[in-house]
Image (tube, rainbow, N blue to C red):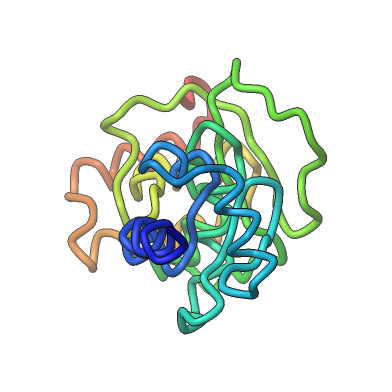
Amino acid sequence: MQSVSLSAIYAIAEDQMGFVTSAQAVAAGVRPMSIIMLERRGRIERVSHGVYRLKEYPVQPLTQYMQATLWPHGRRGVLSHETALALYELSDIDPPKVHITLPVGFRVQREVPGYMIVHRQALVAEEITNLEGMPITTPVRTIRDCMAAHIGPALLTDAITQARRAGMIDAPTAARLEKEMREPVGIA
């Protein structure tokens, strides 16, 4: 029974840098007691409420970001703001905390881990993409979020320039973002 549970968990965790949520495991047919037994036997470790990591899975450089996207129980968090800016390598910014965005009406009934900052915003599907299996705001949404968070204009100008050079945004979009930066009215 344990090998069936472990193989179901592995199937999920392979695409999530070794992480699985209890809800994902249960949806895959793993009984809650099997999750507890796997933890007691040292096969998985609980890293936060409802989030487990396979102990045998190699730790990767982006592990903390994946864990942050899985932390909200019942919903994936979207990497955003300064975190997304850094992951896209659009700026020299090095945020001390992981920024995620959750829907405005989604409530988490537990304390936010100290390494995270949670933003609330209604993101549409076109504003979210994927990076290494993690949901992340698009470069345009990221730059707009950083504008709204009052990140310095030099960093934002650099981010727009880097996004344009990397082909993440086109020239008209870059011009629009630069105009929004100068006239912050109407930031979406």
